[in-house]
Length: 79
Image: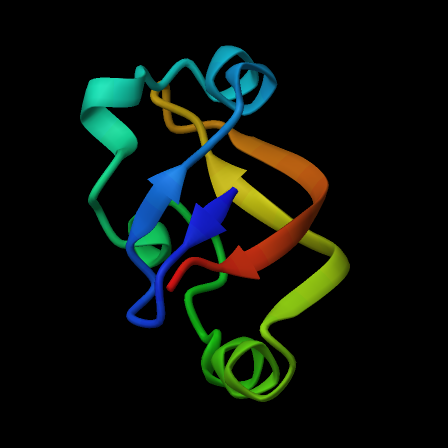
């Protein structure tokens, strides 16, 4: 997943899309908080702004069907 400094999704890979049931047109250019089960991500943004990336972040996302899906992934700020 690539997000910008405001948490807007700029890219997500096909595996994420397949596992969540979302399609690229629906998820791109929306805030990733819309899909997180725990939306309290202030600390993540702080680390992202300081480092520019987070390696192996684990989070639960809502699938299109409303189910919780756990992912471990890298997050990179897209400038």
